[in-house]
Image 1 (cartoon, rainbow, N blue to C red):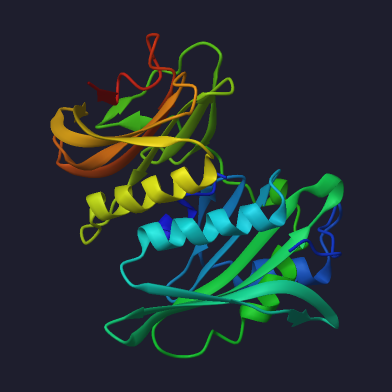
Image 2 (cartoon, rainbow, N blue to C red):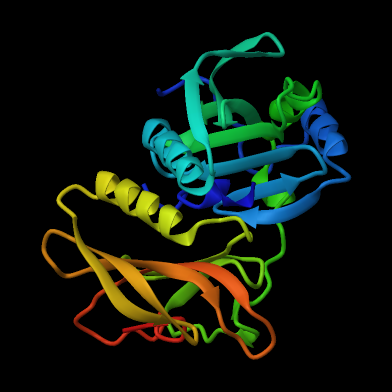
Length: 295
């Protein structure tokens, strides 16, 4: 479930608005957070994820328009889920309001294995918000989902943010070059940006994840979101201490590229599985990505 956030950093309007920053919690927000009080919180790109025993909830904001933002969310799901993902856009009725929304269903071998409900909002200054309540299995969504969604569309994200821990890779704290900023980090999963072009993202893989399938889907999504970009094929690379084949995508002007690679990595303490995405300028040294991926 954690990989639903994989493509939020890449790049339907509605008239509803999210609560402005600093607004006092409403009864809906209080009820939602009470329903999620036993769940584990984790940072997500520009938001927070709640992972429970039989439920997943997320809320994220983006500067993208709601249409492209939601498409990136769905692209990330298709990249990370081993199954057929179907999405149906449909309004959602919550507390007497009709909001833009969508329902998704995952099927594996002809059987439903996961399902969820999205609510989509356009907030102040055009900022978009996507809230999700989802659950595994063949049954209907948990009855608590409307309560959770009502609260997440109104919550001040600063009040539920998860404290970040320093990024680490294969047991070592990752150096942060001057001018770079840690956007999200749970320690082993993180996103770091430098200026407008350089970005490093590392996410953990589950044992049953297929790194090459995920990388290929990500490549397709990036080509779709970067007009004129071109896939230049696989090249030998080293991710951590392990030899791999990395996919590379070049921008139309050739001044920047995105590298995707990963899988099982060798480390001093234990074998780990990671997916690495590096956006960089190939014509100059890159101190951000080099501790993680080299050619």
